[in-house]
Image (cartoon, rainbow, N blue to C red; front, side):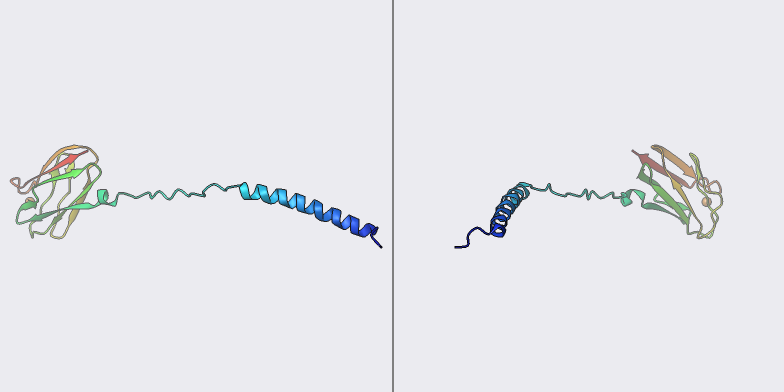
Length: 132
Ligand code: CU1
């Protein structure tokens, strides 16, 4: 019998040691539950609807629509479709002269009622009501 080979003894010892070590480690590894890697995908929508431009036509010596309700922060754009010169003046608005095809934009940043006229044709009246 050749049972006492030092190399064999050492080999078995090492195998047992490795099994114990890796077994223990594997157990720990399995029990480790990684937390859900949730990424915050909250969309920062720019509220495009709030920034849409509201159109007012100046046509046949009238503002169309004559009365308009918008929210604070919205933009109104007047466009002159008449051959005649018009303007939009009053309540802090002053478009200067608008020839055919010209437009004037204004951002309403405060709530309130904004009455305006055309200084060339003062019977032309318009109102923008701005709400919060
Ligand atoms: Cu006018």
